[in-house]
Length: 241
Image 1 (cartoon, rainbow, N blue to C red):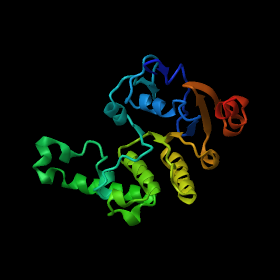
Image 2 (image 1 turned 180 degrees about the horizontal axis):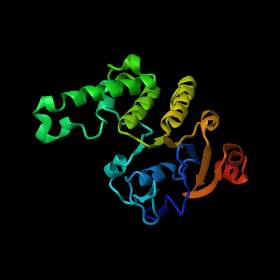
Image 3 (image 1 turned 45 degrees about the horizontal axis):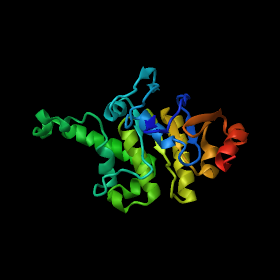
Image 4 (image 1 turned 135 degrees about the vertical axis):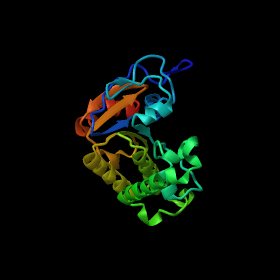
């Protein structure tokens, strides 16, 4: 992936195991967020492929990748600020009959679906610890609550794989640990797959299955947390060695 003469991604290749939590790490500017943008269709790569569940999704529009179940969150949560927590989750429901022009004026054709959507949204926000604030506008939430709300919307969309961009950035340690515990619960109970970009390794590393380390747009090393974190190549990359 090139931006002029800058090679933001340069021949990087790795796999993410299904039903696992993988963390993508590296110094600032190493290409982590760019990689997520490419994987989710925001950027089109100059070369190479993005393969998701055996299908080549390279160059697909973001909404098509989203509909396949590959869903991302953002370092700065992209929420509907004036909508309540429940409403933010409900809008992520796919194929709601009330969105079809031909049925939108026939309330009886989508009332039941609206009720089912609300009930599903309540179950999701309860599972993520947001039930006590279900009716509060998103703009009133703390940073950590906003991160959880983004995950809730991804669940409502039917996500199978979540790409989380710094889910505990700016979050107090207690809630940061809670977010990762809930991620593990989603992996174990729903069989979800996670690829996470995160800098707060003191918290994140104890919750992940695999570490993928990159620098200068290239893959440095990948594997279990302990051997990766002690690898000299990674240490040199962070320290500028």
